[in-house]
Length: 505
Length: 76
Image 1 (cartoon, each protein chain N blue to C red):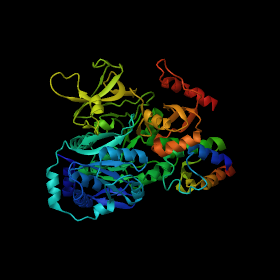
Image 2: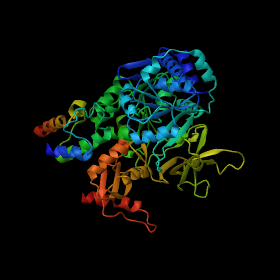
Image 3: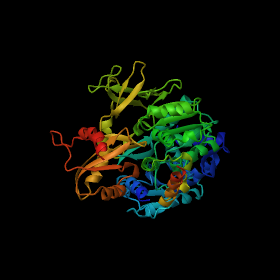
Image 4: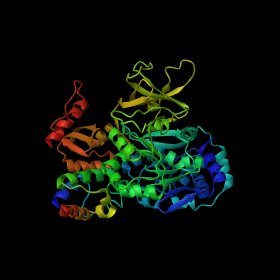
């Protein structure tokens, strides 16, 4: 089974139900299907099978049809955020050698500024094309379920863009698994928070196809005006949200519950980073009849691999578990010497199953480092993904997340490699050296640097070369940075200093 | 107004707050900026901006934010 089968079934089962809604616009499953076929016809006339197609667009109601159109063409989509800095998009263009970019009218200007000689189509060009069923069928019949469906680029520490390639079968398996696990049905209405270029789009776009439910795309600016956000949830009768933890936090930080409550929410899924127990307790107390679930998983294992059902009667004081594995995947912890760990012993979280990505785009070295033979299986080939996340079990077999092996952090639901920020900062002329640390308590990226640059000119430079969420919000200029014996910058020491630094400011 | 400008520029040194007039509508500020700015305003001016006032029209420009801060100061 591949993802095109999902929309074909949907259009048979409930053609006239609404699939997606954004502001005043709505599309039925039949419309989504028709626009996907039109897009596929157009795309197939330009690129051969098995090619990457870059999609750069703000939240747009036609995006699902574009993604499906690319899938029908037996190609894979590479969604790129409109907020991604130009130099990084340029790196992705040269790595993927893409021959086609699809963009909306808002982002056309951004695309025209790129150094790119291939074809550009607007979303309108795609959805206004004619339909050639013969071409579509020919392409569709060549789709293997192990073929890539999409490539998502995440933050990388080396400067080479890190693209996670995911197959049809991993996405099909995931969408079916979570739909069954949480008994999602046509009665549900989803409220999508993340942009559609983010991994979570696979829930927001593909769950409606197999349940017949509706997905509401919430415009980003609502998350800056939380009262309007909750009003929208109520007006649209949203029952189910998959939000990053920071979106739940901001509702509490801005005290929106004092004014209004979501009336129809019965399932809240949070993911992306560790949710503060205080925030969970507020939501739980405000919505006592709603079920809350923690979700865990990196992009490399296709959205999420474990979940934990929160007990509403319980006050959570320290940590919320990430829980246990979904069906059809194994999630376990390995010690440094590749042995299974005992309860409360910390080790690396590892994952086995169909959910594994195909690897990193044109990067066999990194792929072979992270996707390895399961050392516990001495009988047959079994690929295992090493997440780089640290975790442990409690006595009930629930998993807990407790940090990273490297310098990756999660900030506002985004994955950030601190080295990527340092690399850009170090490229500024008047910087001698720099080191980034993350203040977990304040959710703040802090950059320490030495050199003559002023904090203001450095921020402006970083804003040009980094996505907005990656720009450090606190810059601290020191005469020199503390070093370890081997001459490397002492990151842990700088992190410990954070408290003292605030006291001085 | 100087104090407010200092808060805004400190949060986003890359923006010219004298010119911006669609900070929310055009998603120039993200939710993280809003939390930072509202938190700072509340502590510097010793007020407590109500979530009901977190509307695009009150936060689209420095001038609009100043109006809403004034409103709270007068109520005290």
